[in-house]
Length: 227
Image (cartoon, rainbow, N blue to C red; front, side):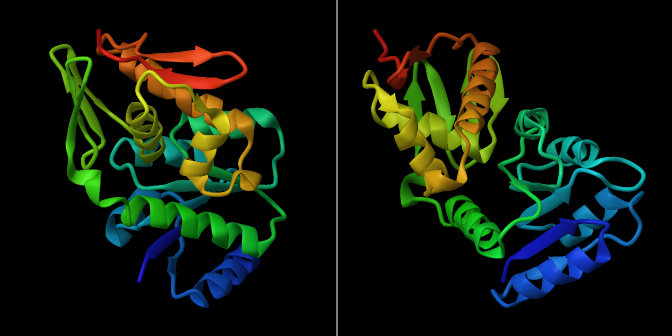
């Protein structure tokens, strides 16, 4: 059974989501004291976190930052706010997805299932160490290491990098990457992929690999082949 932490102050909505997810055998935990979110997070040790943006004490962005300082657990934002900057902010902070309220429960459950399947039932070659441009990529620990240092990747960043490296020197379309990431591109905005790729590039640049992924305008992305 997967443990889910739902950080939501609307008790009616919380109970509805809890009831629906319980039907899928998910164990849902909530927050009673919104000044102790991290204490509950540590105690529950969830497989996935659902966060509202507008919360008592501190907003969901604050708690996303706090969680990301300690864990790469998948995070989905739930919000009635529909401004594009909210989605961009969520992705920049390391969230895996953004669901706007009101939402259809079938869509929410599909997203949760896809993320859990991707993160916890990943391909068997997940444990392999790969080398690329003198860097070692540890897919199991979500890390890239070279002489310049080590960077930690989110699950999305790891999979984007893996997809590109699998087809080194070949153009991988945005549609193919989205399909590999979320399994159903109908549930994903094109901007979400852009945010994830830009974040991956920034991290790679920190260890001298900023030019290793190239954009092919109107086509997709390419992981350069070592010369």
